[in-house]
Image 1: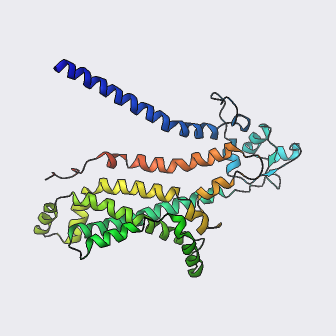
Image 2 (image 1 turned 90 degrees about the horizontal axis):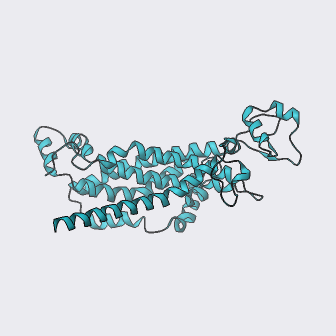
Image 3 (image 1 turned 180 degrees about the horizontal axis):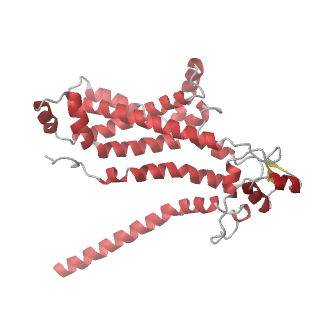
Length: 319
């Protein structure tokens, strides 16, 4: 019986590993497709069957970060000689696109939109996680009158889709002068992520035994000192997980960024689809913008991987 059970366990383990590998392959195919298209020449982006082996080039990124105009005639030798090497690379690819004023750099809006996304996502994530952790600690450690009603009210702010409240928020922001501002989107994303942060952090803090804080209070710590030196290290796993989800939500948000901004504070998600244009779309440029847009989330999650993998027993002995 032991041998049969062992063979059965080995079979199910191998089947589970195979299932995970298949799921991983399915999830990685779109990422590979975007990354490979971002480095393809334009004429290979839409070939059928798809081109797998090719010589990578950075011309899609050059076109992504510069303003360009379509020319009917080939580039003149004068303009070609005045252009820097990265522009000559685009010309050598046979594309009749050129910056105006014979090589004077005209930056596109993607760089500023990318910086806007970083500022707004990082700031709103920090505020949402900070306020959510403090609020969750209050609900977890103190008796709050109508606690269930308050928690339900906080959760109800996530029940409506963003498009439902977008028009009222737009009118309100226009009235108070927050339209197309970084502060306006930061406030909006912080409020949108706060309910998620509170509920998630309350579950983590509830799992931390109260005896740790009581022992710290007996030793002379104040409530705030006990929170920062005892509770916060124990809740680091929850904080990391909450920060990752809040950052991804703020980073990928599209509806509010499209409606609440115009140029000054617009983020990358509304800008990338605008590159399709009215003519023949350059999918290599769109893929390059999407590939760069994926990197901050991947880097942020990678930096927090140790905290995400740690159990709640970090720094103390569980009860």
